[in-house]
Image 1: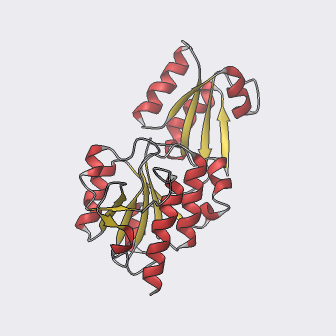
Image 2: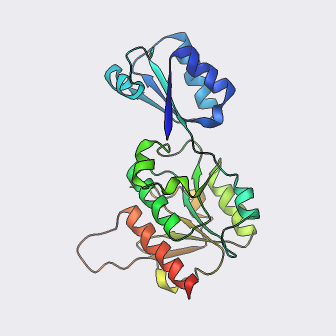
Length: 243
């Protein structure tokens, strides 16, 4: 689960001593306090997500009115370096789920739950992008977050390029793709990239995706929720891998 650290000096010290544990920093709206500005600058330099909140919301997050206009979300989740995951994979042909910037914690938690259910090797998130791994993610994952490795990377496109050099196929879902998802060989080392809600994948990451697949839709809806799409693709991967 996550912990909240609040107060200007406490958050500043946290950013100095253990920045890797900070998932997000929340600030008071319209503040000009010099120490809060210092915290904001340091958080941005460390590429830690920041968000603004009204005093009432900060009080809810911190659990007290004595937050001094700032609080930080600290996760207890220990991240696994991607190199360690690849050196000791769960499967002979590793399966990675890459979430570059999802903002809905329920989507993230649902995908993590499915990834663990199909025995994926790890979930990969991008530093400073998307929702933090907060209590809502823990809850939506139904405990799966405690059982699956999570890696955090700084640059999505560079990570995908490195994975391709290591023999991974990089697969992304796209409504207009010509290839049906069942036609892909998921028994190979695979990095499954799920774009963010509404925005999809950034152009530099799209260029690194070697395979685009579509999930057929027969009804009136135009697309599936990202967590549902991930579930369809992950279970197809497991079906193929189980033979």
